Length: 395
Ligand code: F3S
Image 1 (cartoon, protein in one colour):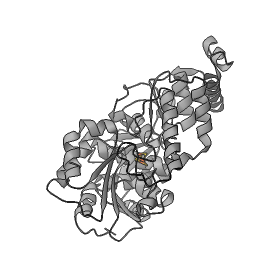
Image 2 (image 1 turned 90 degrees about the horizontal axis):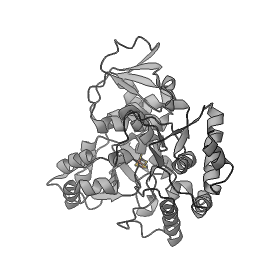
Image 3 (image 1 turned 30 degrees about the vertical axis):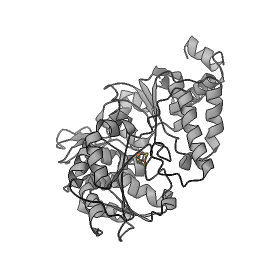
Image 4 (image 1 turned 120 degrees about the vertical axis):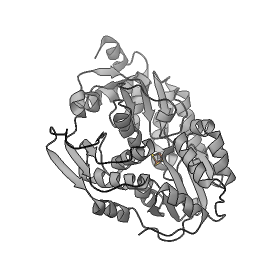
């Protein structure tokens, strides 16, 4: 530790900074870090009251009361409600108040109330910058697609880093730990972002925390790769991936695996429990980009969403604002562009949702567990079709 870091550690700047420094030092000791390094930004999970409950509120209150303030740009993950449109007024008053308090506490600590899992659409981290991000889908995105360097943090360590402005130098902050150790050859054609998600779920389980080089992917649109990464980080601990057009240059990687049509089918079967008409079509896990809103608006133009189906498109307030034109088209068709939350971290039972169709493998994986709904994974195009006419399971 530097002199200054020691003073923080010894409590000279107050309890909030002392406890934050202790968390980082402990983490560094555990993983063999040689020092703390400055970060460009932090992204904090642990915002949704549905998932974190009451336990951390007291800790957050103590941090804010003892003067803890973010030293770097810090953003926060979605909450359990959309705060602007009040979709969830039916929830018990206490639940709404507790969720509001969590957000207020983060605000008091100087965190930006972004309430999104795609902070990179608001401000893209610089290539080569070090970050302390929680939210597994954002971590794998940052490492793989933005060349920003971050470990897969938990909510408390990301918050501690936000307050101190540093992170322990271990794991993916060191170049030697960012090498691929396995080659994945994709030998089937992936046609939609749902296929990319299905591949991700399969790979996450096989790879666990290994970093792959993936070759054979024909479509490399950003939102396809976002689904691939989010899904890999859902079923496994993979923190990043590389893409190559062919496998010829990958002589350094000894282990090789192939993925074919069958592997994808296994994934789809795992992620499908709904065969009937859905109550909810959910797009926006991870939260949508302006480009995705443009595509959705294109599919919906001139169509009408069935009155007995909800169509949720989740995104950040920032993206909603800058893609206003597409938002208007979506809402004119009967879809709802919802900010601050998503179908996984909110309560669906209270909204009478029993069956959900989504283009997100991450949601199809989690929603049956967190919300006890039946789910099916379908491409974005099929999802929109399902919202506007009778839907049939592809299995
Ligand atoms: Fe984001 Fe919710 Fe999915 S927080 S990554 S939309 S589960």
